[in-house]
Image (tube, rainbow, N blue to C red; front, side, top):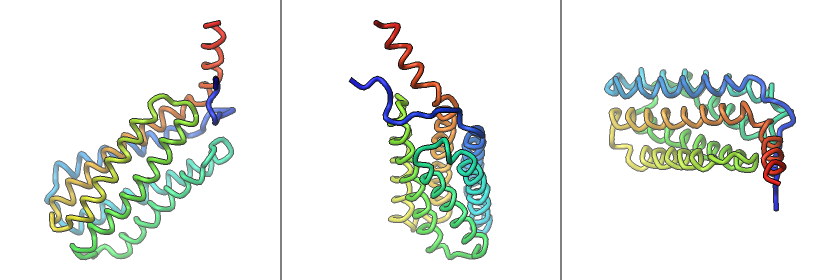
Length: 199
C-alpha cells in the first residue's frame, strides 16, 4: 500500500502567488469581455494579445524561479512560451481576418487545455485529492476551443463569449493550481502523520 504520493516537494514553491494573480487577471478579463462582447474586432484581438503576453511572461518568471522544486517544470515552461508566442503574433498582426482569428484563438485554447490536463495529472501524482476538477475544467476549455474552431461563423459576439468563458475557466485552474502548489511540500508529512496516528 502506497502511503506517500509518487512525487514530492522538499520545499515550498516560491512565488506561488504569481499563478494566483494570473488566475484573477484571467477571470477579470473573462468577466469584462462578457460585459462588452460587441466591442470591435481590433479591440478584442489586442486584449487577447496583451493578456497572453502578461500571463506568458509571468509564467516564465514563475517557472524559471521554481525549476528546481517542480517535477515536470517543462509543462509550465511550454505554457509560458505558448502564451508569449500567440500574444506576440497577435500584437504584430492585429488585423487578422474574422475567419482567421477564431482558428487562431481555438488553437491557443486547445494547447492551454492540454497544458491544464497535464497539470491536473501532475497534481494527482503529488497526492492532491481534487486534481480531477482541474482535469474536468481543462477538458471544458478543450470543448470550447473546438466550438470556436468548428463554428467560426458565430462571429465576433460568439467568439467573445466563448473566449471569455475559456478565460474564466482557465483562471480557475490557475487559482486552484496556485493554492495547491502553495502547500504541496507539506502534504507527504501530513500523510505520514495521519497514518502514524491511525496506528
